[in-house]
Length: 390
Image (cartoon, rainbow, N blue to C red; front, side, top):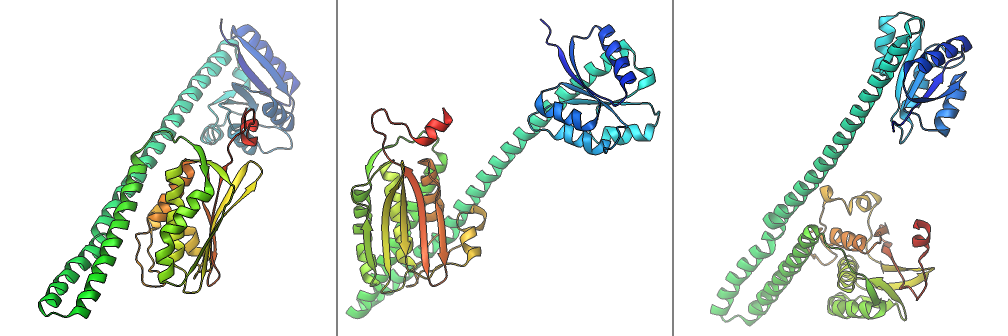
């Protein structure tokens, strides 16, 4: 069974509307017809119903036809074919209307049943082709964006390998050479200092490699993340314990307040996020400062925060923190170096668990990173977002 073509006729002249109505009735075209005697009424009908084709009179009183045409074509989710009806034989006007998006231009004096039906069918075919072309263009643009992202990720990896990873290894080579000379000279003070420098360079290289491999693996992993019940206090305690030595070396206070809170998360991912955020806070907090990891319930979610009293950041730097194309590195308060990759990794890991990582900061007033994770469901319980989506 042929699906009728849904047609909207917008024309202020009742005689002309009757002529179009008769031509359509004799055309053999399966159709439904709605009529509007003015632009405002036509827009109201077009907003309320879906039409395959609009027959639009060029001269409507009290309205800009070109503006009306743009509105009809711009309706979201609509793929209308608009044909212009006019009593004026003006080629220049026809060209302007076609450039504005109309698919055909018909002289009212020449509207016949067969001609009108043919124009409508051709317009529908052209509209369908344009819709397919637009869909193909959007798909190509999406693929292009995806390839561009992959290229930027590749460039980032090469940049880290060529620059960030080279620095600690150059330090290792230089320090080991000096260490050999110190050993030959039997200089215990120099030996101790060089050995400590080698340890620091090796630690930096290892941390960079760990972040690099984790981030690269995450980009290549397309498997779904399985969320389970995770004791937030246990994870926070593990992270705080791991950062305790580095914090003590800088005279920082580390604290966690997440007791009794369980979240729906992937434990290793959550641990990696908190470890990176706490390590970042240690890096940018001056001696005597405080770093806290906290969690508090808010409905069926838990807000997790890592707060420091460190040096903070200006608004422009905050805006660029999670931008792959603006990756920057800043030395810590004790000269610690980084790759700028840790926060990108944290963002991706949080998003994989259904959250969004945000940051607020002010110079000399510290920085706070926040993200939300759901609480475990009780038997028969449904999260609010699930109810809304059902």
